[in-house]
Length: 288
Image 1 (cartoon, rainbow, N blue to C red):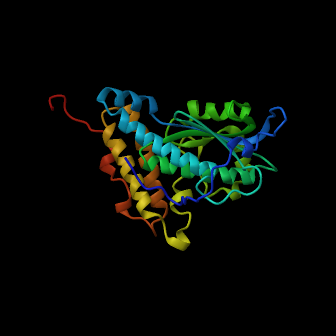
Image 2: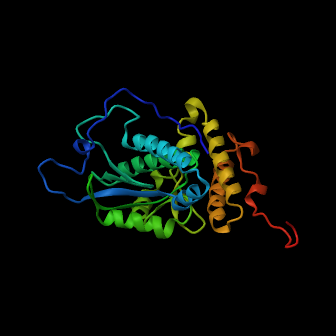
């Protein structure tokens, strides 16, 4: 269930005080809502994982896997593992609790820049968590938000939460109506950032935004793509006897193959999940 993370380089800087850098917090001023791009994400099947680990005595192993994956990827999203921070405030704020993560990007003009940042950060979080065996479902909205160590509040958060809990369904981060409206107004900017699913929902194309981020300089990240493939195949095999759960990982498998098929100059059959693994196991009632 493990895989390597990509494009994350540690530096030797001491950690900043989050509240001092939080763009929503102004010292000495009362909390104020700010128009923001908002992402709400959680881990698909987290409660079931915890229950199964409790029953089969593997809670300690699951804790280590989950803690390592969340700690590493939250640090990346916060910017602690990338380039040195510039200025007095960060461009966004992050709040994580258990298996959930909320990210807010205050909008300074028309949300175009903030949406690009959101698609990038969400993609790396979603992809690296998937390689570790944890698949992410989420919603992304544009609306009012305030967040600090005590509170996450605002219509933007409510809409992102509703999109995740009621609309996303599969391991995808979809655009809520508010974000979709802005994207459609600037469609020419986002062709390589997003996909539209068969149900019409627009979702973040996390494989394109990670595997091909530097293909002209270094070529695609083949090793990481294969780690993603293996994580999906593991989930398909694990949940083959549970059609409801299995169908969600079948969605990821189809998305993985769709991505590979879009770039035949880079990827072949060996990078794709075999069709036989996308079939539920059926047998006669007299068979064991």
